[in-house]
Length: 306
Ligand SMILES: Nc1ncnc2c1ncn2[C@@H]1O[C@H](COP(=O)(O)OP(=O)(O)OP(=O)(O)O)[C@@H](O)[C@H]1O
Ligand SMILES: [Mg+2]
Image 1 (cartoon, rainbow, N blue to C red):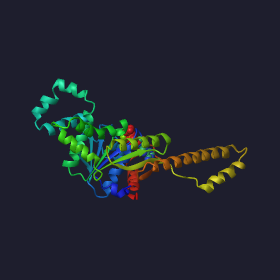
Image 2: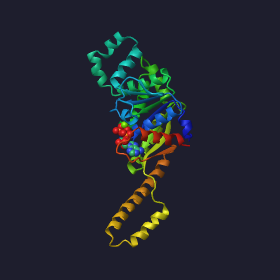
Image 3: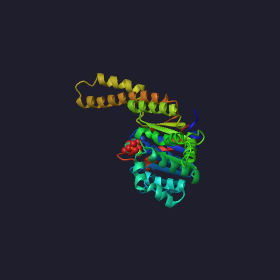
Image 4: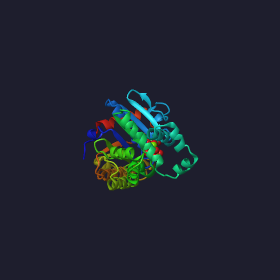
């Protein structure tokens, strides 16, 4: 298992996981940690409602790469824009692009090629990685199928069409994504039973398909312990004396619920450590809506990881 600082020296970071577990928050925190280490970072979201803009307080993130602050570039990779750019890159000439891609029949056909969107987005990421000299690229993956589909596309297409205009580039893309010196697939989960089950499934799938080298398991929204053994024991003592005191009983109930929750959480945190990946636990931040200062705090946790 690589130490976390070594993993973070890789160029390409895919942040994967189920919907709502905190992929965008983790991607922003990771990007900020890397910028604070002096890297030139591209943070990419993939045709998502813009969550990076508000989290980092940098204004809207659009389809053009923009340096939002020194060292931090942001982009929203839109499949249609990316498809055109990718095709132009491959086919070289605008006229040829128009003939091939803006032909009504081709357009209809492309809609039925299920992987085309993923391929073009992957192509765009690859293009940034190779051509744009970003020392780090952080991709906030879509949650559909854990975001794995995006990563697998290049390989699937390279296998299916080993020759032809796309073959060379898709093969190089697939190689980059699989390269353990350049790419890391991070998994975000929560310290709860179902999300941890899903993280285990995802690890199994990544290993089975060999799609990309595994990186860090981020266990997000960890409550942590308010109660140690001693305070837990004193709760029982208090309960023995609380009979008839409604306010105290109410307070005890709240405390006992929290103790239960902490116990469940400890179990799931242990199961997350069994994923076989280095773990970074991120605290649950008690905010109605996370913003820049919260991202910075989480970035600090990432930077301190051993
Ligand atoms: N450590 C945390 N502490 C408190 N709230 C958090 C934390 N991490 C994430 N959240 C909140 O949880 C919600 C989901 O986070 P986020 O948008 O990053 O998830 P996501 O996995 O990107 O979701 P989606 O699959 O919809 O893209 C957000 O409201 C976010 O502010
Ligand atoms: Mg998101």
